[in-house]
Image (cartoon, rainbow, N blue to C red; front, side, top):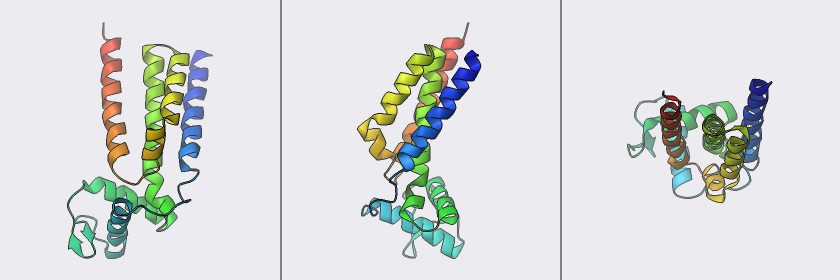
Length: 159
């Protein structure tokens, strides 16, 4: 029963936060210069089929890790060259971060604490804005937090 409730919580939090973050991704244009720049680099990858060297207006642009451009290019391939596609992966990573906080809080404390911590993170204004802004900041924060939360959980579980 307890495992079923935890699974239900995790699936609910993941789905609700993903819908919460995806809801208005298309409602406003891309911010200049960052979002437009990263979107154009991913679009050029799709047009030229050069997935190794990122280009911006034909000029090599090596300022960011290429994984971010690949993710944006994948979203553009799935959803077309839209603002929704450009902001899809930051929203997805936002939902993953909420889910990680829940799982860690549940493991370290209890189900209720993990759920409350995840809700607090999901509704924090800066985190919400980060999940709606197409740049690398939220993705890096979620990945670093995930590493830290896994380490904390492992140390706590060690005999």
